[in-house]
Length: 322
Image (cartoon, rainbow, N blue to C red; front, side):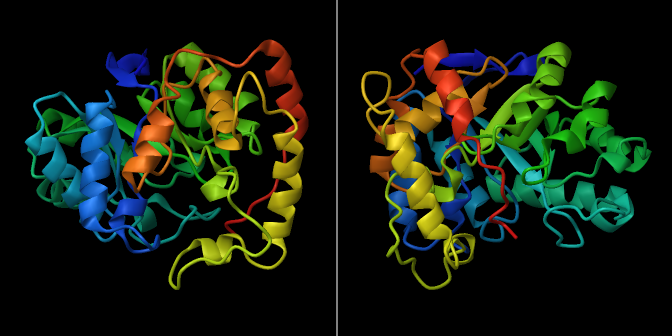
């Protein structure tokens, strides 16, 4: 496993991190707690030292599983979690007031709940789960974060940027008040590379990349006839003719496979890891097999400049979350 400096935090994190949404069990079907715990332990065995979870994932269940595993390990494992918006709106809506989403007392209370779920006195990174750059000058969120840091309950502060809206955090990036950003970045959504990543490199902000496999679209297994279990959020994500669209785009990517990447998911993960602003990428890994497949890609191999330029032609701007 290779490690990268996590911006101004001074932490060295594994470039393959663990996205723990799926193990919460509420919106992703098919994972059992037994398999999830095995997957987490296997990941740490393979050198992974960064796990990203959230209070809302299974109403705290993901945090509880992560906390159980971390407590059982002797290795130093860094954990990031998130405060959900009080109004329950993902992403943050234009014109929403900060007090509707992240009032001072609510941030403190949510952090306390997460600490109880994790079974710890402090967490490495506390993130706000949505963001609106209009909130940048509002002191309520920053006062709450400062209080939690003063109490020793969080070490660093981050923001999970709204889906497909990387430029909706540029004002915050310029303030120096944020340590890490979490953002969607993959072969299809290359938008963070334009403005956000140059800011992160300039301001020494750590970058957590989520959805590197496009919720499975770049996993290489979606067909026109793929069916998902009842209650699985991917039913909506890949509704109507979206599976057909995915197949058409992935078929084009398959023509690029060979020496630099043997599978589409390998190509997708190496694409993200080849950007210098990226600290860690957090694919969802609900099984031991997922963990072993993804972690072995952390071998220091970056895509060639020629391949990176070719993949620019596969940008696909759209929003399947709507």
